[in-house]
Image (cartoon, rainbow, N blue to C red; front, side, top):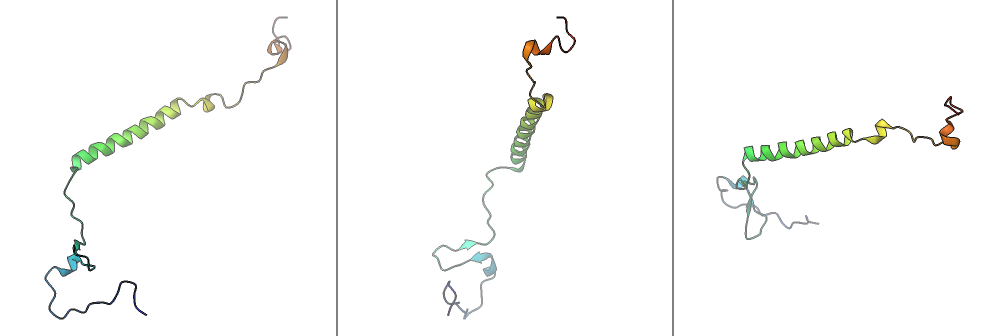
Length: 93
């Protein structure tokens, strides 16, 4: 029984200097093990995007806390008969 990736190739000559940095799985295009993608976003632009996103979510949270009606009225106001029991609670008849 063998491995699902095929037979292991034993080198018969010395390996190149940086052989451990190349992932060669038998495809025509071996790729580097350490991905070095070109910088598409600089670190200060990434910092600005991160601060903008965090401030957006912080302002959204503060808006939700400021507009929280459940904490201002934690229960439903009761509606009583006879003009909300005005006379029974000490009001003018």
